[in-house]
Length: 288
Image (tube, rainbow, N blue to C red; front, top):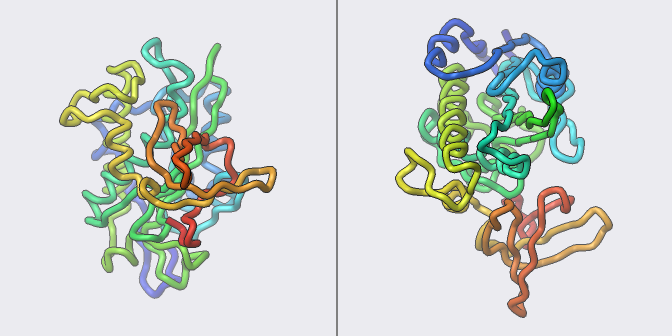
């Protein structure tokens, strides 16, 4: 039990978690007190055939986690929710549809965090979540071989119980800081998985068509729901590419393949995919 911030942090209650998720069609559920990387460990299980669709791997302490572009992601013991989920397409989904699981996970987290912590959470393209203008969650999705095909492991790290002085950078926050109260991590993890399962089920029912209304979501499509929560839209952004070139334009839309649609001062539109960019920041330098 970690007491570095003055009070003991409650561990995720595995018995209660099992009770809260018993109605969900989860695959294998693996827990480790400590893990180098939940994504790496779940990917290995998937490759070995030991994990199927909606298998879950979570830990209290991730020691060698990586974010997008290989950046290190390490948090104090018991302060975050670090979880990876394996998504395996069936006949209703194309491999291309798997590219939307980063946004699907982001939407699931934003809905879960708002319900449990009562903190408005928005999505920053391509793979972060924000509370206000501060990063609260990072997402890393990676393709993995599963049987004769491929799946995607979606790893997420939600900052929950860090104090301000425990956050690694000034642009980060936690649900504790944003809400000024203690958050039940067991309930929050279960709620995230509930949202993820429901979104995944509906996404498959429309065969991964992001422009089609999702059953059970008030006639909204996945693209609509993500766009409504996308803090990047409407912002003047600066896109940095791996070759050192940059582009400044207004983010105006999401394309059907998940690309961010940018429009420059002359009205010219450009689409950029997550895998094509190094950084996307607001033109005024703020994180959002």
